[in-house]
Image (cartoon, one colour):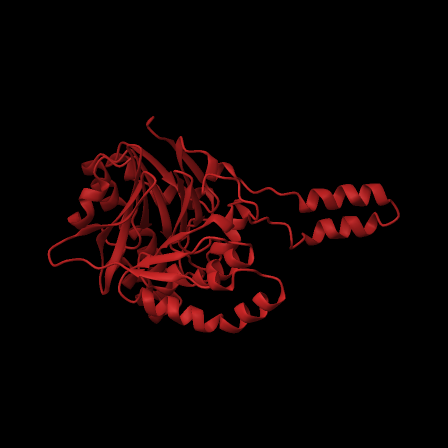
Length: 351
């Protein structure tokens, strides 16, 4: 089913750009030009190849930022397409908007994997569940995640209950699909990984990561036709999840630049903002220092290290250069700094 081009795919067309609406209004006296402009506006730009291309693993960064109020980036969100299936890892604020901007066929989304229950990883989940249903999702949506995920999904169901009732009575079919179902991931004592998904050649394994005091916190390893993609979630650098990194083709990993954070904290103190300075420094305690991460990736022989959840957010050429400075001395694979909307493609082995 998932390899088929869906009949009711999501189409980024019902909210018309204000600028193009103005153009059509100005062309009011020229019907043909107005029709042409409107046809362009509503054209379906959905990328159906995310479903039909079974020769690659496709990765879209739909959120590379943090809860920073001044960050121009969406919050944590990564989409992976493999084997005709769509997998969403975390759904922070603006997840839905960025997925639409990347022309993802949202009606076919069936699996969401939450790494942990910090707000910037779940604040967009309600919108993802609701919006994919409104856009004619015809498959059940399962949200996988650590202990507490069932309560999160139940709470969202209560929050959106009236909206679902209104929309189903108006024009949206399949009201039974308006809400997600939760799948809580549990580990046996002494076990650091567990397989949580295995379908149509795609497997997803959950790994413990170290984001204490947030516990449990998870990373996910997706495997398909001999290729491995690991999404770290939030974690300090630790050997606990080294097996997930080993020989991975792509690692989408959170990162914090210690020097930049310490410089920012010093500047805050000079302005008398001591509380804000201490808060900034506390983030260093449970995130992944860029240089420590580079050394771990080198040990694990990671082929491509892609940085996300960037603290602090680098928003120009200089800060992007400063952010990764020194990493190439410790890691000799491919290194990339993530941006919202970035897309990558990994060729899978032939069956």
